[in-house]
Length: 431
Ligand SMILES: [Mg+2]
Image 1 (tube, helix red, strand yellow):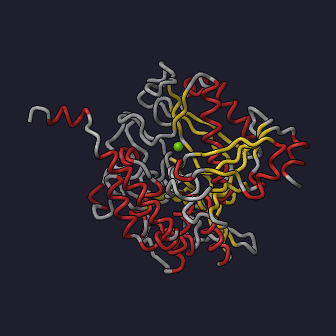
Image 2: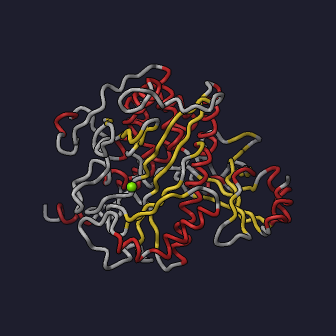
Image 3: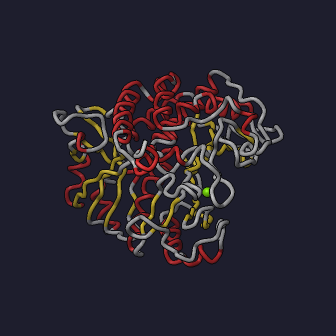
């Protein structure tokens, strides 16, 4: 059925044709339903250089071609339909555009008979509209996780978000106050990786919009406050057999995992130092991992390239039979590039039968000496250098992507590095 017909049936007056750029920003055009069939054939046109893609002002139009299967009616304004789109230029998909990168990785996995399913835990803070302070002045406990009073003071907003994703059929199952003051998490059911990536993109839009409606500001920034736990975006992943529909991670060892799942996990450990450039993509990301202990007593984010069973101090946790949880990734991670990097690292692990070794049961926060050789990168520059050297991810995600991403991210690092901070002045003014 054409989008125009669906618009008539659903009462949609406008479509948001939306694509995600390399820095995770949603870029959109608002197209009236009367024009949608015409526009969706070639795609909505954009000047690509005006967004975070590796293009120049001289390049021709980027056409964002909407995926009709991704249609989401805005729960707070049902007359608008959101569509995830794939950027094209010169008659072909732009190889470095994030949704195209993920689709290529998924297609490669599909050719081997695999389907990756993911669930994401997008933590966020609710701040005052200027973004400077936690919005609830009474949310001050040193261990605020699961605090019933602080959760219920934000009931109106949290319930509105949860109702919205229930209406969309995402099957939400819990909401909570997280480990930092002002921090929350809303969980919904896992799905095929592209569907989860589209949903994660829409979720961030939804949360930010509904927070604004309530006079608040939501942020997914990895570490908005240096003394508080940061915003993770944990990814739960499993690989399924496309033919039999069986979860290939389920096995019968003591953690309920299969040999294939350990190879996948071994691949993630193998490429972790480079993967950080994708899963922890901002300067601010590195204030969350390898961070000093927070006021709650733990950062809940990893310091080391290690894995364990049901143990939250490691980069990867096996919480339950048949899936792994990557605890490394943060709220700034691109919804499409993050699962693509996980999948490429994991597929390399399967192909090369990478051995992750035995799971560590220790609290690695307290035993850094155990893993002194397996530290995560200290900052974005280190991560970018690691990514540059990581042939698995470069080849997996594609040279065109790697070149474009490194170019834009290295420029971002130089921009950051050129700023003189208040901290530097304090330390150096009287040198
Ligand atoms: Mg959490």
